[in-house]
Length: 226
Image (cartoon, rainbow, N blue to C red; front, side, top):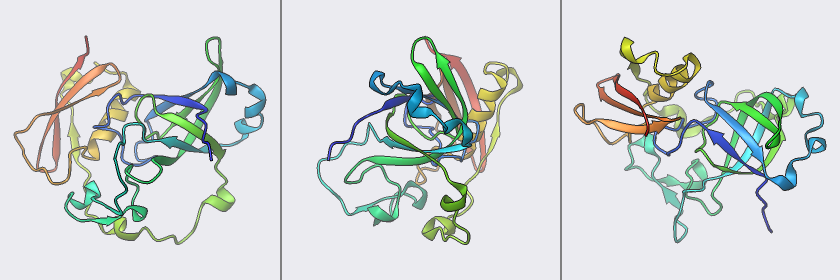
């Protein structure tokens, strides 16, 4: 079977570190789906504007491994506990495909790319390849009384994010809210506890640095990248 790329995503996260861990976890996280030229047909999108959400099938473009491993180490279990790969959403799987449900904010016709989709709740790297989209059907896709397995047994890991007043105006209001919510999920590996260590990652066109003390994440700087 041949799988064809239909486009790619422009997101606010140029590197893997700091990306929301699940779709919808950061509702402000924006993405724009730009279709490859072959699929830039307004006819292919006819009726999609009637839906509020879409399923996006995409590729973990930076997940590389040489051979199949039946178990992986979920970061939220501390990185030391192994679980079956098919019981996790790890990118290291036989086919490195991701599945996310995103809010369809709007469909825009552009001069350069034709029709693009503006999406919210993204958990993807900037430049992520997309292989398909399908409408989310509330009558069938929402399952009442579903069970979340070992993910429901995890301790609450949300952090309080503190941004100094002098840094709050560096980003737009919506971008700052997205950044704060992404940081509140604690992007650090779960096995690292070092209150003095300074972490950094790119966000949009900026470099963000922070450190964590207990349950408080302090943003140290937000600087425009050269």
